[in-house]
Length: 130
Image (tube, rainbow, N blue to C red):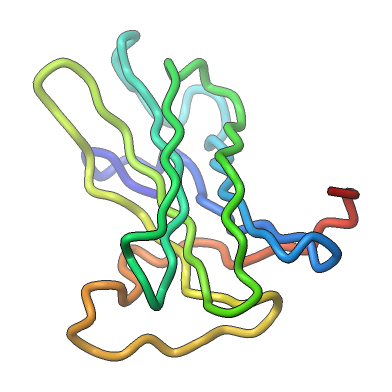
């Protein structure tokens, strides 16, 4: 994920096969690699690849630590994780993973507005109980 041409971190799509849910995680770059203002907020979310009206959004003050977002059920459609930064008077471009249903990447129709942009690390399995 880039902010002002600086690598600031990676957005991941995590999932739990037993729960049928996915959630976003932002992993920051190594300390000192990105110089973000102290009043920066990080936003992580999920969006359904079939119905973009189904989405989650979580935001908090950025402290240079990993950030997890809210879960979104994805047993019948694919989901993608998103992340961006904001501050007073500015907002970064959003980074987005591919759209996955479990471990399966699902192609999204061109022109649907949900195709992956700023591709980052893909999904990771989690064995955490619901």
